[in-house]
Amino acid sequence: MDYDPMVMDDAESLGPVVKISQADSTRVKFELSNTELCFANSLRRVMLAEIPTIAIDLVEIEANSSVLADEFIAHRLGLIPLNAEGIEHLLYSRDCDCDEYCEHCSVTLNLHAKCTGDDIMQVCARDLVPVGDRVNQVLGAPIINDPEGQGPLILKLRHGQEIKLQCIAKKGIAKEHSKWAPSAAIGFEYDPHNKLHHLDLWYEQDPKKEWPPSEYADWEEPPQEGEPFDYDAVPQRFYFNVETAGPIPPDAIVTEGIKVIQQKLAGLIHELTESDGGENGYNGPRSPGYNEGGDNWNDQGSFTPYGNGGNQSSWGGQGGATPYGTTPYGGGGNSWS
Image (cartoon, rainbow, N blue to C red; front, side):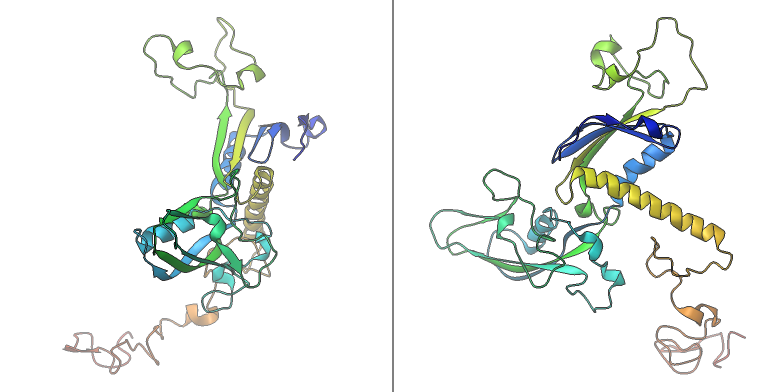
């Protein structure tokens, strides 16, 4: 990514202004101004927890003679960053029509390693091999950035030890589990001189020595000696430092975060403007299972998940009858009326 420091002054009267100070393959630093604290913090929270990525969610172990337990290996596999390019074309498992997983909602990776020599064998992320049909040739592939080209270490094997397993990677967000987090860390700062007194800096002797100014202190004017406090002042400039964990580039984290906010706002506007409360083709974010079931919500409880009709339970039979005899609530099938 070749970014030059830029500022969009022409957009100042139209909306938020962004100034990029640094951008590379691992992080992007930018200043967001002409907006409010609530929006800036919303962008930070969305970039942390609501951008979809892909991660290993299911591990089927066929053979494991290493010293690590199956659950320990599965946990380590889930934390390996996978390439999320093209993730928008992959379905969530809850939205797919398959029984468990398929090529439309998952990516399959195989791992098979056996140590036949006397030296300790290292099994790394590069040994995970994607198989089957995929949206593209990079989706679900392990992210490898180290100079040796090995990737994160999974486990070690000694002579005669073997590991053979199959991994199912699925789409998700960090709000469900941190393994789907797109960013390793997001720095967020405003008012570097603490002119608004939003922070109460604890110190022992000298606060200036114990709390050194941040790198953004030179971007704003320091407080003047004897300057009166402005009770109406609000933060206007916000500084972000977005570091990627590997699944998607740092600049894509910012753009995808803005898209998620736009979808949330579109969903809110849709619900506020539609009088009938229906979805009407809306495909924005919603809770799983929302508004599903049709008219079954209005059947006055005449069916249960177990029943064949009426208010029968899994014990079946005659209304209030249980394995312990008839209950005080009656034996008829219409005991609710």
